[in-house]
Length: 127
Image (cartoon, rainbow, N blue to C red):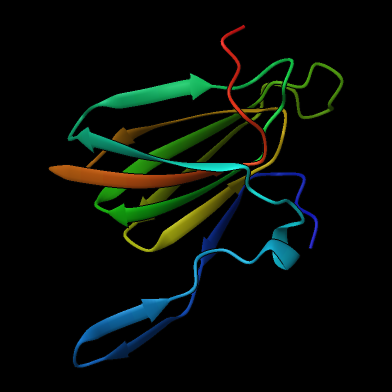
C-alpha cells in the first residue's frame, strides 16, 4: 500500500488469558524501512511538536505503547493542494499512525503516562 496522507492503523490484537499479541509494523505494507527507532515518554498535558525534517525528509511510523494521545499532522508541502491541511486522531494503546513525508507531526499526552514508539525512514539532522 502507498499512503500519501497520515493513516491511523488499528491492528488486530490476538487476546488470551495472559493478555494480547499484536503485530505493529510490516515493511511490505508501508514501503519504507526504518533506519532507527525512538521512544517518547510524556506526562498528561505535555505537548510534543510540531516537528518535521525539511531537507532530510522522514516517513514516521508511530505506535502508542501505553496511554492515549491527541495526535496532529499538518501538511507542510507548499506544492500540495492540501498545503496546511490538518489531520487529527486520538490514539490509544496499541493504535498506530503512519506519517508520510511533508507532514509536521506532534501530539499532546492525554493520560497520566504516555509511551510512544517512533520508527523513522531517515535520520534526524540538526539543521
